[in-house]
Image 1 (cartoon, one colour):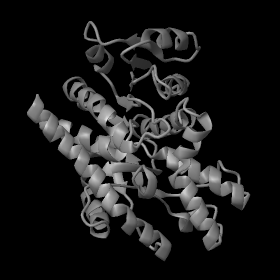
Image 2 (cartoon, helix red, strand yellow):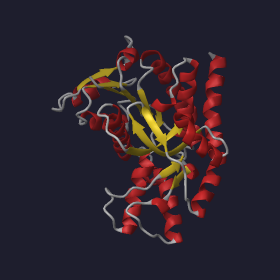
Image 3 (tube, helix red, strand yellow):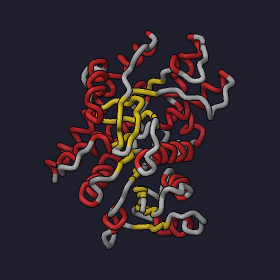
Length: 332
């Protein structure tokens, strides 16, 4: 039995993500939790002829406990989307509390699950989840992931428009974090190899970093990147399932993780990023989650400069998440 849980399943990301997970035949049970509408989403998806049994849960009657119990993998898209004029700081104030409360539930009812955080701002929400897990004595850095796969998907799509390669075959490592200047595409390491001009590199980097703004503007107040994010979340979830359930080897995906997930290689990255605790890099997945964090080697000068520029923002984001858990504990 492989149980997957979506927390925030009725939202703009949650619904298409739940659909894509229903199509994943490794999953035998799919639990959908939200504060509204999740039973309806579950009823709709249950008509699809794939193996997963789908159940929807609301907060009453121990809904969160029932949704989480026995979970193998938990994906968290819960929260409000970013709207025009809304900063990620505005977003943080709303989503931080939502993520904290869900993390408390996970620590109580599914402490061994693999947890994938989509809720923005990821640079801060992953540290919130980690701090809650630490307080409950269940933190395992190998099992907590910030989903940055949308940046990777965008990098493949956008770069292939210039290179002419099939976007399905293009891989661009994206390191750092998951907002603005913290998103660092390593275009020097693109496969298949392609030589971009410096002007193209700078334009591509900016578009990958601010691709979310492109969608927010195009939707004109009606939401943010939901469909592409659902695809990215489902893709990363599939990689986790392939590694942890099927035992497939050599699965490598970038993800924003606590660098203690691989002490040896994590410490090498810490040396390069002024001892930050969280950073996104290529991760090799194994049956226990993070098997290896890949070091940052042979970067271009432009990429090294991008990392230096990202460090203050990342440090601020991480500290904000950690401080939030401490401040909210005082209020409790």
